[in-house]
Image (cartoon, rainbow, N blue to C red; front, side):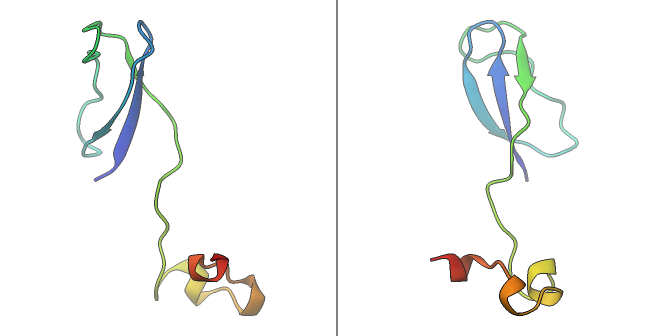
Length: 71
């Protein structure tokens, strides 16, 4: 299930909520109770790896950009 980020346009409160993609977006701020929440656009916080993913199956040699090589 994806984690969505929200910000209240009234008070500036930010929160994260794990929701199904089919769930309706949140509207009411839990801090000020105003119906002013907007969904933010953000990058996912995970990386896919292992057999079957683009980086391991289709890139070759030094072009592979795997997390294990970064450390």
